[in-house]
Length: 227
Length: 215
Image 1 (cartoon, rainbow over the protein chains, first blue to last red):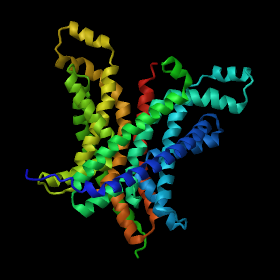
Image 2: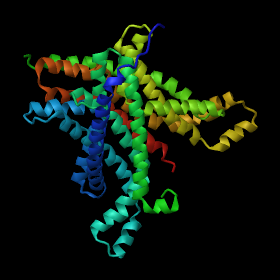
Image 3: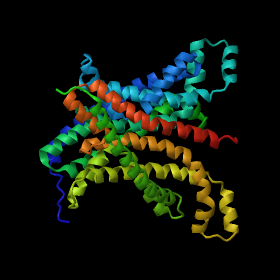
Image 4: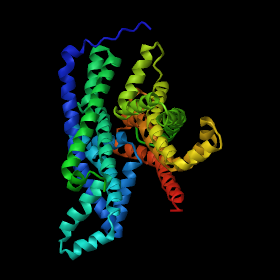
């Protein structure tokens, strides 16, 4: 093998990679927050809603989970603009990632909510908690604590999947790599660099979600045992 | 500009065959790799376990799209021609291997410890223990999650379109370029993916319910 690896392009292109990684972080943090909120509402609707609402949420979840993210992104970006709703690439990316995240968090949160026993709700009733207080303190937080490992790995998977938004010209990390490799012809090296950046981002996200979990679940913090 | 017609739909269906072919390649390759990874993860040697878990962390920590680019351009470095099908097959195999390895490790570990002890007492060696006692039971546990993971494989073959392999997603883009009706076309493409994936999802759920019927 006579190939010589050459990472010299990093000397003057590293700011591009930093900018790309920063956009990836912005896009994914926003989509994770919005998608999780959407998923939580849908999960509550799926468990406690009427039959029609339950059906609708079920259809949404199945439609998203059985089609590729790439196609969902295309439908939002190209499809909606052909129907007259023109959205920028960044906005389309956030919408598609949010809708995608929403479906997966619905399924995960549903499992958590269903694991809350009826007696807990009755106890909350006896204590005179309002409906909102019950949902927040008795249903959602303990449910989230139970499924938190699954949730946080789904969040990391979404961050990785955001690389697909490069296909609609969102200038995030993968798109930066595509640009730099077409300037420098150092394809393999460029993607090795980006792979390392993504590995670092995954580690960063995992650490951040661990910290958030620590802050969120007081009982777990004190006792150190899973629920 | 072309009018969207029945021929375009036929073209999409023919391309969907390549999605199925690529999925099967990825599943076959991923199964072989995944079994090796799963066995390495439960190995007695710490070094072997660390190697397998390092591999899983590496693949699960990078986007499949980047793995795809790396194998596509990496082929060029080792002096091979850049064939999209080969690059896509390799990267989906690497991807499926890591995830299936992790799924199957869980299934192997779910076989009760007493089964290991009993087969030890019967004087079986480690290969015999796996072949006659542990794996047959692990396979039963593994079927529902494996079928569920096949949905991920089918969906992720859409990324092969990025390196120019003409499967369903790429065919959708090609038809769109000539007819420019993206909403209709990508909805059709999504519907075909759904038709491929939904039965697998349902099968996975049914199998899981049936497997847990005793509990």
